[in-house]
Length: 315
Image (cartoon, rainbow, N blue to C red; front, side, top):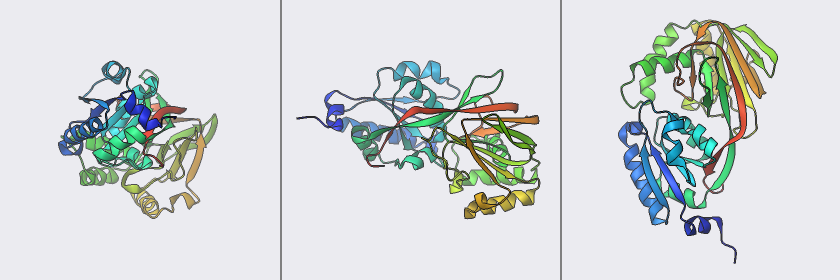
C-alpha cells in the first residue's frame, strides 16, 4: 500500500533547521522555538535550533547549516524571513514561518500560526507551494531580496527613523513618534518609474509601493490584488505633494478605496525601475535594506517561483 506524504516524512527522518530571532516578540522567540522543537520531536522529526545574530551574512552563515535539510522553520518576524529567504531559495529548502514578530505579514499571507503544535503538524502534513521573490539591483551594491514589498516615501522614512532609534523589539505603538516626525517633515522626492521598459510616471511625488504580496502593515493592504505566485510585481503609486494630501491617502487606504481613486496608479510587470534626481531612502519588508544608504536609481525584477514554502494543509 502506498504511503502518504506525512508517513514518508516521518519514516525517513525529516531533518529540520529552526532559526529563531532572539529579540523577536520581546525575547519570546527562543521559548517558542524550544516548543516547536519539542512538538516536532514528538512526531519523530529531527530538529536543530540556531539563533540569528546581528549583522550576519546568510550566504556564509546559513549555507552550511542548511545543507541536507528538508525544511526551514523561521521563528521571528518578517525581517527574519527576508534574511533567510534567499538562501532557502538557493538551497531549495521549503520555508515555514512561525510568527513571533510585530506584523508577521508573511505568516498572515499563508495562514501560518504561532502555535508549536500547528507548526509541527505542518512540517509533517503541510503542502509545498512555490512563490515569487523580487531581486533588487542597485549599482555598486550587492543585490537585495524583497519577499513582501518595498516602498519609497513617508513609510520608508518612518522605517528609517524607527531603525535609527530602536533598541529592542517593537510594536505598533513604536511607530507613533517616527510617523508624526516624518509626516511633519514630509517633502517627497520626484520619482520616475518604468515598467517593463515603458515609462509610467515621470517626476511624480508621493508614495510608491513595489509589492510581491497584498499584505501591508496594520492591514492597509496598499496592493490588495498582488499575488505571490503570479510571476509579476505590483506597482502602486499614490501621488501627493503635501502633508494633507498624504493624510487623505492614508484615510482612503484605511477604508480600502485608494485604488478606485482616479489619481492612483496600479500596474503590474516583471521589471520595475525607479530613478530620482536626489538620493532617496527606501524600505523593504518593513526594515531598512541591508545597504541602507539612499539611492538615485534602483531596479526590481521578479524571480518567479523562486522560494518553496511549506503551508498548512488545505490553505
